[in-house]
Each structure stands twice: as C-alpha cells, then as structure tokens.
Length: 324
Image (tube, rainbow, N blue to C red; front, side, top):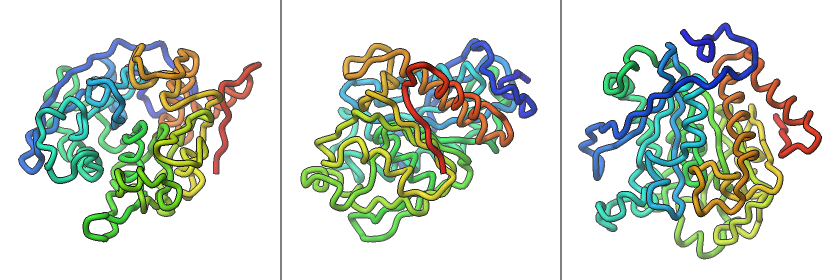
C-alpha cells in the first residue's frame, strides 16, 4: 500500500508524485442512455485501497475539454498523489454534439443525466476496475468524492444534496448519492430565482429553483473573486459562493484572489479559454483540493489544516479560506 493511500499516514505532507496510469475510454454499456457511457480512469501505478474521485466536466468552448479528456491539471495531480480519478463524458459534451439528436430528452444540458452518470459509475465500479490493468481490487469503494467545475459543479452539488424542481413536471428532484462522502465545487453555479438574468432563466430553467439548504455532505467550494458571469447573473462573483453560504455545514470556502472562471487554468494545459492563466493559482487549487479530500475521507489526517496554514503563511497569499 502506498503512503499516499494509507489511512494511518497522518503526516499531512504531499508525497512525491507517483507514476500514473490513465486508461480511456472505458465503455460502460448503458441501454437506457442515448449513447453508452465512456469514462477515463487515472490512478497511481502502485497502491491499494485508493480513494475515488468522480470528476464532472464543465462545458467550455474547446471541443475536448468537456469530455473524459479534459481537466488534466486536476486529474493528473490527484492520481499522482493517491486517488483514482474517474471522468465521464456527459451527454452535454461538445464531443457528442454531432452524434446526438438535438431533440434528445434532456438536451442540451442534460442536467439530470449528468448526475445519473455518476451513480452508474458507482454501480459499476467492479466493471471499471476489471477494465484497467493493475487496478482490479485496488479501489476503496467506501471512500468516494465528487468534484466538478462550472456545470460540473452543478452536477456535483446535486449529488451532494442540493435540490431543484423539474421544470417539465414540477416535481422536486433529489439526486443525492449517499455513497459520496465529500465534494469539491469549482466555480459552481449559485442560486436561481431573481439571481438569474432573464436570458439565463429561459435557457437554463432547471437552475431557477436550485436549493442548497439540504446539501449537507461535506464540501469545499472554490470561487474566483473576479469571476463575473454577466450572461448568467448580475450578482457578480458572489454568486459562486452560494453553495457555501446557503448550504449547511460542514463546508469550506476558498476564495481565490484575481481568479476568473478558469481558476488559473484547471480545465486543461494551456487552453485558450483560460482568461486568468496562472500556474501558481492552479498549484494552489491542486494542493488544497487534494488536502481537503484527503482529510475529509480520512478523518484525523492533518493535510487540510497544513494546507490552510501554508496558504495563510505566505507573504502574498493567493486566496483565503473560511469554514463553518
């Protein structure tokens, strides 16, 4: 068992990065879905009892970032430091835009299907393990987290306990996944109602009724203080703090200074739509998310406190953390 995955390791210090194996696509037959579910799996080449992170992509403008091929800065880092990272290609992916009929139920954002993809993955963890060399028997099915950026953050929030009202039938939707023990919401959408612009309310009606009051699973919310989604809300960067402010604890909020929606470039290496490119900011996100997940999945591990202390101790901190 590698030190980075051993529950008794309480050093709170990142190990040197381990070599990583990444396999994709792993295809999960899904008869009740418009196309079969494809995932990428990244994990250290050594280690047992690897905790699992389900990573939900956003949308973006590039053709492949909104798929199992995106978010390498996060997936690579987490895998190199002891996590197994599973990335699905959701039906909303630009890579499927020419494959799917635009009249497919749920199009174009497939908000419900996105969350259901994660439940399907957890239902078939044994199948996924068997498909990846060196991985069978090495996943810890009891230590599972979810992370998501932008629209992926909306997906993650539903799995963590946020609710909404289905705009088609008026029913309350509860997609909480009890097997998920922790979450990371990266620039995730905030509340609906009068917070949304008129055009956003028309295009994304499922966001109108987002309710964080029952999102009780522990989560780290990350927001950039220069993230101004004028096409979605007039509230400015504060909108992205709603999953922290409006949800019950335990929650933590990392506010990144001068960060825009890309949070320095987490969606891919050197991608054009990163308007605030900063390797230093990406490094902060990598380390703090790793530490948060580590300590939340292994209670008593000091990694999160050590990372918080390191952030605050710098002469020019790149962000601040608060918790409740």
